[in-house]
Image (cartoon, rainbow, N blue to C red):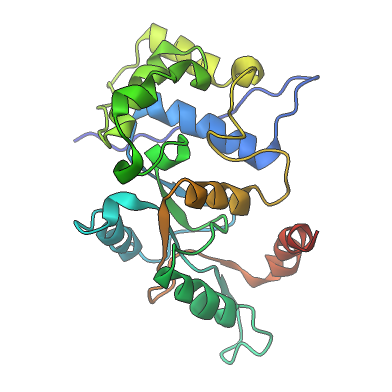
Length: 253
């Protein structure tokens, strides 16, 4: 029996380069995972979250693989719930009006915003590609491969990624692949490319998650809000004031 692969990623941080905080880390993860597995779907969790309901993955796949409109779904957003909340939730820590009201109602339009943790993505959407109904030809998309950097391994993986195919991770990675992984994690890899603007998570803004979701909607993708019981990805309630204030301030600005 072969166990699932667990990889700890420590990206390069060098004086003189802006590491772009969380958005930069997510973009490095996006590139490295393309060589390790090239899985067509990715889930975004913060360090203080955990998977509370394994059926959430099945629910997500029902939307992503729906024969009617699933191929046009870029991401599925789950609500953010909390542990240690009093039974009546007197301080509205679960934000049910926002999540189960506003976010749910947006399913009838193009879908909810991307709010960060508790989201499953389609890899092709993160690459800045349009949905299949707007994508004339995969080859034409890949013809702009130089925009994604100089890694031949990564560019080749994008062809499978655009077609939602995954590669089989080798039991022992070849030395050439290991060297390529190191290249993808360097600070200078994104120089002269649209990473952080048209590709991957957006840079230079406090709410990189919300803006990244807006970019996908602008390209024609739709999204889905999904709420199941028990809640999918809770975190500790004591962190709520600290975690909620920066995005709120940024949105007001």
